[in-house]
Amino acid sequence: MAAQTIETAVTTPSAFGPAAALSCRECGTRFPLTPVFACEECFGPLEVAYDLPTGDPESLRKQIEAGPNNIWRYAPLLPVPADVADKPNLNPGFTKLVKADNLARELGITGGLHIKDDSGNPTHSFKDRVVAIALEAARTFGLTTLSCSSTGNLAGAVGAAAARAGFRSCVFIPHDLEAGKVVMAAVYGGELVGIEGNYDDVNRFCSELIGDPIGEGWGFVNVNLRPYYGEGSKTLAYEICEQLGWRLPDNIVIPIASGSQLTKIDKGLQELIKLGLVADKPYKIYGAQAEGCSPVSTAFKAGHDVVRPQKPKTIAKSLAIGNPADGPYVLDIARRTGGAVEDVTDEQCVDAIKLLARTEGIFAETAGGVTVGVLKKLIENGQLDPAAETVVLNTGDGLKTLDAVAETTGPTATIKPSVDAFRAAGLAH
Image (cartoon, rainbow, N blue to C red; front, side):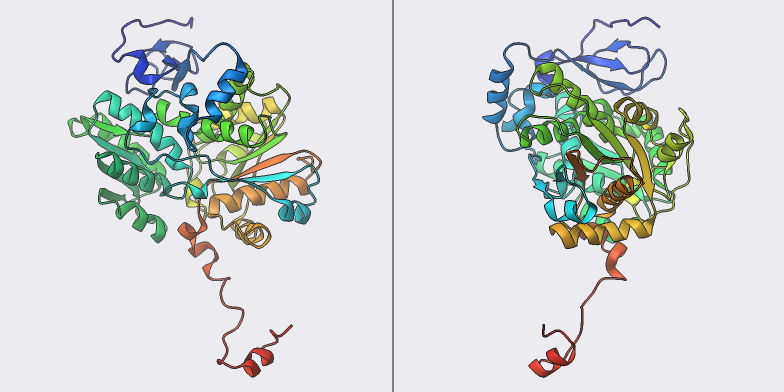
């Protein structure tokens, strides 16, 4: 279908910075910047299209570097107003890029390894980035309630951001989430509702609620605000390249839940190339899933273009989305860049959590264990060049998923308070 343009705008363009329209990924039809997420022509997903800054890349680079130490330094590239940093927000981002030499030696990586550690965000996961952008859209649209379907981290991020900005929040989660994530989502004072079922059941419920009069004035960050929400993940790409000295890494290993994060990181890298902020060169993107919920990995290995839904059964609950919306686009990116999509068992995930903690002092949640575990497996299988520079994402804090390691992690010994007891335990060396 030929691309069309709908001229009527509901909001002023300046409210969304360089964003020009919503564009369908499938047919190219363009729509005004409104709280919608699906194309009226073909039901394809919508994403934000931009009129990106033009001119001297060096001037833009200096403007970014002079900005705040959070995602708002990239406001000229995001669907937010120029004064976004002055509004009540959690201001996430610009988290550490850790040079992981110890882990590199352990895995036999010689080309350099970095961990992009997003556990340093306000609610200790990358979800603060996407929620920050969605919140600004909700504010612009005059919405009053912030909501989401969530596997845990997003619920906490929405609750915290809503509390900070003075919004009501009502979030929905599977009934059997990790206790740490449930407490964190509830502590901000919003409404937390457990749904009997898995994430896909929760997501279907939210899609129904959004069409009901009850949902009037609600901003579901990953449903009707999804096009804006997804843009927050681009800031991971921006930060990685800036922290590497404005250059692209050779490889990036990214966890897959819905797949949105991976697709938006690729979008961010492409934007940096287009703007002249980084030199163009090949890079490979690798996706990481848990074996117990690996629909994208299964499709990739089989050479399929269709991602068949699976019923999740894994300790990596933040990645337990059996019907990932962006799965087909992940396949396209992995194949286009020469990367891959791989999966690991729960046992390999736990081993990788401990490996990262032991070598780099980073305690990752299960999603990080999956990603590091997949990195290890890719090297062992010869799918990732150990002589190439690689960045791996840790998207959340291990304190949220203590159950994953609690049974096999504890005191080395329990002794009486004496030096003799310490010596007798074989610890005096």
